Length: 275
Ligand code: 13P
Ligand code: ZN
Ligand code: NA
Image: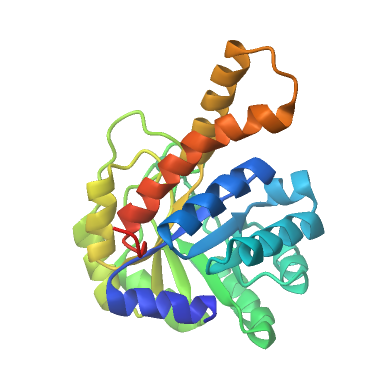
């Protein structure tokens, strides 16, 4: 199954796939251990900064190797691709799915950039995701910019994009106030387009609320901040507790709680074969 087919299947089954960012060997290990235990499919996401940190070939190689070794259904996805040039590099490196994020540009420019990526990606047969409306980036205010059903329909029609990240009240990072998702708006967007709808910013959203979003059309749930936060907190705890310098004994202790967190997240999206 490729990612387009996976997302279509999620639409039919009214479930979602978890799309988790990874940053290094340890966070990748946590994601894969949990996916294996829960028998859940996973999209391994890389952002530009993670690609710069690990190196493109190394990051893809690690992801691919892990998918094979853990025997889980997994794919590699470019998260928030900020330029056509980065998307091209990722297509050549064998990504299964790419996101072009021109959501901060005017509508027409978002359309033309996304359309260019859809055309570039076609020979590769990979899934293309774009963002319409604006999901606040880490540390930024939302300030309006919610996706409208009319624009969503026009955007998908004009670009031929497979998946669409929608702005319905979520934001990247943790929330100062409890988030509220505009489920009504989501249901209208879902009715207006066949595109696979994506929820960004799931860290900090109560699981029931994410499930409600899935019941109303979300098929891909992006998770990043909680993974970093959980891992780093656990690591700090481990380091304060002992003088151990064998990092091969230290890191697994910080990975273990992240595995537990992720098992709950796979359960939340409903793609786990383990109840
Ligand atoms: P969070 O960091 O809020 O989990 O958002 C993740 C995300 O949307 C990655 O694209
Ligand atoms: Zn995002
Ligand atoms: Na969030």
